Amino acid sequence: MKSKTKARVVGINHVALEVGDVDAALEFYGNLFELKLRGRHDGMAFIDIGDQFINLSPRRTQEPDRARHFGLVVDDREVFRQALQRQKGVVLLDTPGLDFLDPWGNHVQVVQYDGIQFTKAAGVLRGMGLEGLGKSAEALAELEKKGMA
Picture 1: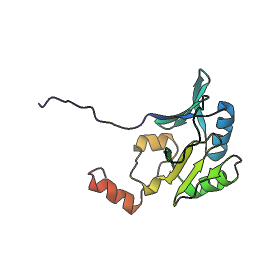
Picture 2 (picture 1 turned 135 degrees about the horizontal axis):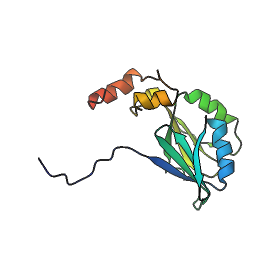
Picture 3 (picture 1 turned 120 degrees about the vertical axis):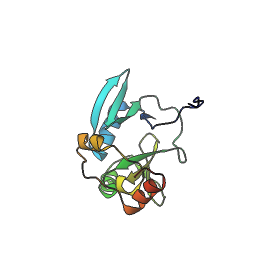
Picture 4 (picture 1 turned 90 degrees about the vertical axis):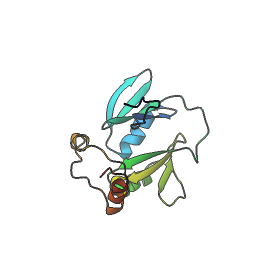
């Protein structure tokens, strides 16, 4: 057996967002999507996303970001867009997709689950109440090309 010299990245466990006020951030993001609080520790809050989470940290130190961002996957991007348009403190960015700056300057790009190759295990989807959430033909083709469909 060949000796392993490098680890393989399996996924992303969580994303940490620096915000000015954790309670305000919980309210803001709670108005955009169904929010399940995993817990709080040392002034931080942890929002569950099935088998992943977002860490809200109260120590925002940098200017708003235009290039550095993270992608959030939702079941319905248009429902998310409508909720986003009702929020104060949001800056919608002029992009082909759905990108915004939250009130603390974090750049978030929102994509819809069925249109991308990112996939949750059936048990995770079931636990999230999202069983039956499918993929587009294009997303399935991307996965098939990699031997993952």
